[in-house]
Length: 384
Image (tube, rainbow, N blue to C red):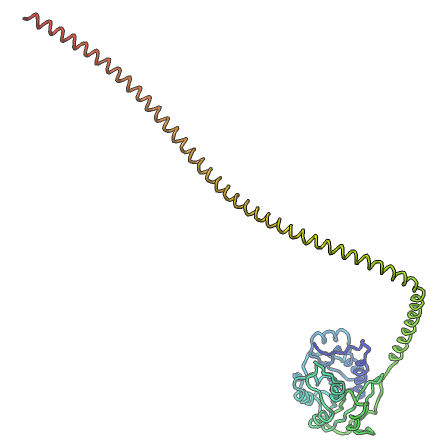
């Protein structure tokens, strides 16, 4: 996440940013310009109306793509790039514009050197940054997006070590935007630091040669502020009318309010009675919950007993099925035994008949033998 200005938002930043580009436009006619941290491209497009060509660079790819669609000119090119990693040859730009960027850079000194590298010897760097004494110290404010902020002397000394010519202008919005030369003030910078009219930002115009045009102090404004004041005044008048109407309504409604208060008192009594009834019901509900809990416990116990009985019944059913199988096996065994017994009985009867027949045969044989013996005995006696 980062700070970003949008020109459609008419707040204090509108005057600060647009005034800076008005200042830069003085130096860019027919020049090759680099606009660092161009944002959505409104400033780059503004400069391209006078410059030979403008190269607009920003570190955010989505912003660059949006700028390509919104702010278009034949001599305006948008590139994705970082101030510390500028992919340009040395000494190629006539003018470099770098507004409210250096304070966001991790290594601002490297960034200054990089800007100096791609700027022609007779080129001009226009670079702005917040005045730490006012922007942060005076307001007791710490911008979470700023890494390094500068005091006036620190900023001046840093630029003078890199550029032969350095002029720093102050800027502060006073229902518009004022840019003035800090070096030709009636008061010194030290005296200004004790007053209330201190610059919120420093804008430095730097070059490798002396004689750079020094613009007069300028004040930028438009009728938007007056329009806003008029609009606010109309809103205030409308609100005053609404307040007057509301007062009339309040006055005419006093009796209704009194009646409403009586009704409210009655309702409060009813509410109190209802609360008492609710407490009674709550007590009964609590008792019912306890009874229900006891019943639930009993139901749970009964459920457990039923489950236990179900297990026993299931076990008994399995036992009965086993017994049924044993009985069926026994029945089959008995039928087999009965069949075997019937077969044995039939065999026995057959054997009995065979024995009876054998006995008859034996009896017949015995008779025959007896007859034979009789014949023998008779014959024997005849011989004697």
